Image 1 (cartoon, rainbow, N blue to C red):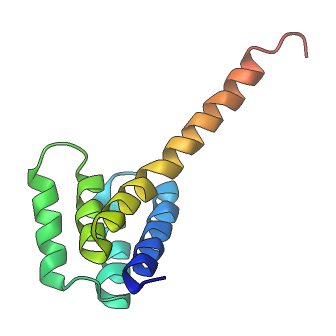
Image 2: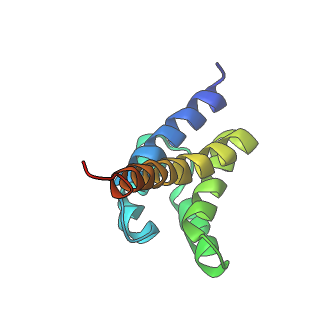
Length: 112
């Protein structure tokens, strides 16, 4: 496995965990992201991290996914960008989907 692929998987896995425990958007987990991306792994510099955050704030749409996709692109190219987007959106979507299915199952149950 190449270094870029390994870095992309590490980044995506970390994002998956953060996406399940964070509420309130990117400012809530910004310190943790900075620690992982800049301090621990050195994937981007402080200036690049700040630039990615600023760019994601001025562009309309899901700025959290956009910023992490930019960093994922820097870490592992297209594979890293896609992995970052899926890592941050996939787990909460799956949790919501299966939670709804479970809720629906018990709400439509008759008698007991």
